[in-house]
Length: 116
Image 1 (cartoon, rainbow, N blue to C red):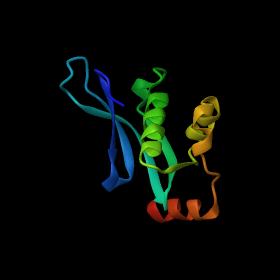
Image 2: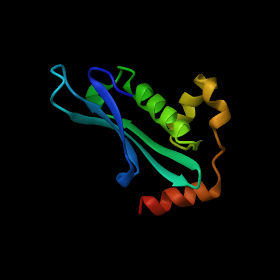
Image 3: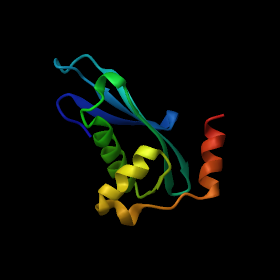
Image 4: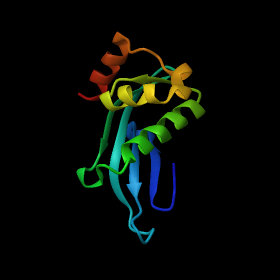
């Protein structure tokens, strides 16, 4: 996702997407949010969503998750929602239903291995 001010970037080396605010001038870039993930085969496990408190209430977490979900689908992967925000967001967007996989024990093990 990009627009004049906000951009979502995948940072595969860190297994996360970042939400960047380019500011009103479009130049100063500041990381203001993230979606952490781990891949298990062709499934991307989304386990943490966060946006800086100073940006709360602007719908940016939703924009972040939509951009991430769209990117995951475009990459041919399926979505495993673990993060409570993503778990709550997906039912409100039934167009993504066919791309969702239920959480299994190997997903939880992969998260634990990554966050140690």
